[in-house]
Image (cartoon, rainbow over all chains, first blue to last red):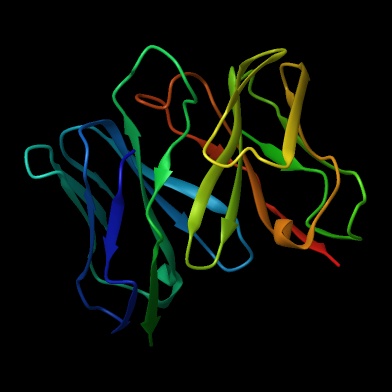
Length: 113
Length: 114
């Protein structure tokens, strides 16, 4: 079973700062997902990646398959970025069993004005 | 836009009651999932369905069952609710295998079992 570790668990920063959230996993994967959860519970998928780098607006996600590590970066952070950011992985296909994700415990980000 | 809806945002039940949590998606997705989310533990997969009437156990299926009679609807059933099933329950769906398809989540149901 894959172990997914995120760091930091909590992060408070000032508006405008560059933010980095890290995710490490223990077993080879087929895809890694970054998710955002706002207060109230709703979860939104930000990125799904299996190699390289993806960018969407002020968000950038990178993955290093060899090192089993991914980072989520937020440039020019804003108070509306305050949320829990969750890393999740999908293992390589094994010919059967549940197709769910394995999740990290999340990083609680607060951006202060 | 994909929409995943859940029947209730908040639910309070008593120990021993049978509880039904309903999830509906409107994008003809094959795969549907039920997760629970607990502080300090993150999200954990309870059950997964890849087709009508098909289901697979996830990491924590004990105390739960599921039903998928129609493609758009996936129900989670707590046969006899217990206090340790107090949690946030999230439903999700995806077009196909999550190795190359993103998951879309419902708003969640916060269940309290007294």
